[in-house]
Amino acid sequence: MGEQHAETTCIRGLHKEQQTGAVNVPIYLSSTFHQESFDDFGPFDYSRSGNPTREALEQKAAALEGGTDAFAFSSGMAAISSAFMLLSAGDHVIVTEDVYGGTYRFVTEILPKFQISHSFVDLTDLDAVEAAVRPNTKVIYLETPSNPCLKVTDIRAVVRIAKQSNCLTLLDNTFLTPLYQQPLALGVDVVIHSATKYLSGHSDIIAGLLITKDTELAGRLAFIQNTFGAILGAQDSYLLLQGIKTLGTRLRQSSESAERIALFLQEHSLVEDVFYPGLPTHKGHDIHTGQASGNGAVVSFALPSREHAKIFVEQLRIPIFAVSLGAVESILSYPASMSHAAMPEAERKKRGISDGLLRLSVGLEHVEDLIGDLQQALKAAERVIEKVKN
Image 1: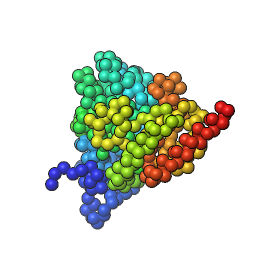
Image 2: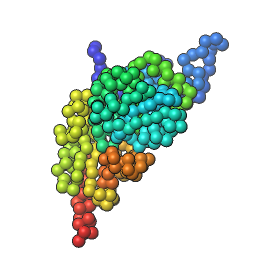
Image 3: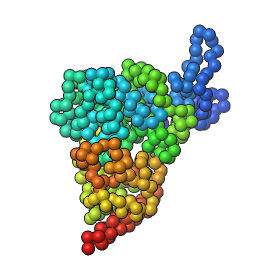
Image 4: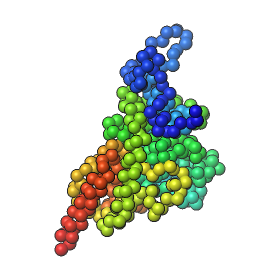
């Protein structure tokens, strides 16, 4: 039998429960483990250092990303923070300009306290990336497609620059998941996930993952995970394993709906811009299709003003208006005051995060219902604004 597809790996893991043959990995709610021998400890001693439920999750995450080792954390930001702990005082990091607001906050507010400097760079501009590399640059941090404007970075090209400069590459793969993008196979050193999003898929847990296939890096990350201690608990590890089982079906349907919604929005007169890598008009579309096998289920779009966005949001009936994405329910976010609230207004504007920008994570509702709801909300926004003008 050849190498199995990722959708199969989502369901069939490496863990086999020997005693009972239980289909689901048991939840090992134990902080500590009895040691049979005075001299030789078993594989588990204390759940911060290792837990059988978390281990089963980490093995599955590594298999999905084509890695050898994975590490599960208590949140996406705990995973990101832990990855940045690979740096030392005096180091410099290059970070994609269009980046999640929480990552921006960590890079600008926390790293400088440890004498780690940073540069935000448009990673779609390879000349700018090369120009930003310094002798002390140790990490290039990527998001592709990025949050919230879905900019596409040429992963292979940035990895090439990084290797020439002896830098590590860290890539946030939350939006596409290992089903649609395999960064390790493209040369990336560490893949990051906010597993809260698509991997879990049910708006129930907070979780983060780091995955690598480099033995030396794996050892360093294992030390950081154990020392820092922001590990994912056994119960949440179990729920994440359950969520991953349906990832293939969920992501496929949501992505198909997202493409139809992106096309609808592109044709609407009130919508000024649509950001979706599956659109041939999307800047970076060709690069995206060369490194990803799917387009994902996030669509961002710009309305003319904050007032238009406010009316539109208040008229919607189906999507929930909330922080986060990647769930079975459609989630609409307003980046300026939600995902990117930590970013100063001038920095948001510089990155194209306008006051009319909205980010829609398309869920599993029927696509005709979603389009109908978007249509009536856009009409309401047009109507109210016209009334105010007159």
